[in-house]
Length: 310
Image (cartoon, rainbow, N blue to C red):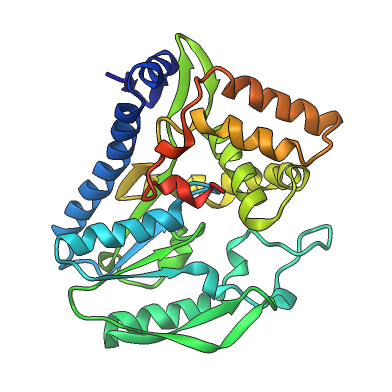
């Protein structure tokens, strides 16, 4: 059995299972995530009469968007209707973004959101059971003229996901009984004996490298450059509020380090890394080399990891 206690995963056992029974490893890993979804859905069902809105937050590459969608499906299986909303649709127009001290636009703070409109939408939803939610058009950096009409019943759970979802400002002036909060993120570290091989933050970094390349056309260099500010933003905008959560889901898929070396090696072939970038990538690859390789065709189509992969 995989040692998985105090948020530590044993690399040696992972490797042994890859050699002996890779399908078992994948099954155990996916079930670990799925069972957490089911447990949260069950807990929500027991307090759904007191709550209409579930706020979901997590740092970059935590799978908060995919997890929100999968949680909606889990709720549906136990007879609870839900709808998923992204806080990204409440972004202010890019030309209205607040500025940092150096004059650059601030893309990370809670002031990137139109909090007044969000408050109106929450009020209308809770009181009238319907509201017109904005739609942000990322292609032009502005709010669309179109809106999303949300119509709910008394037993509907509205799942609102975004990096600022747990910030108390989001529910300021609201009845807290109308809200529940969920924090999602990889929170397990990989150890070989007492040696830390891969931290949960570095696992998210690897996820981001792969996802940004295949799904956002970002180079390794640009993702690395952004990552420093991403982490700084998390420390200010997300981590202080994680203890506010009613529930947490560890979105580590235990076998995932065993597949990333393939993708990163493929990406590196398209780049000419040097200096800082080369050293950083060498460190990542050294960590991933401690894991035996898992066949890619064994990854289920339903896996949350599909959010990142090619």
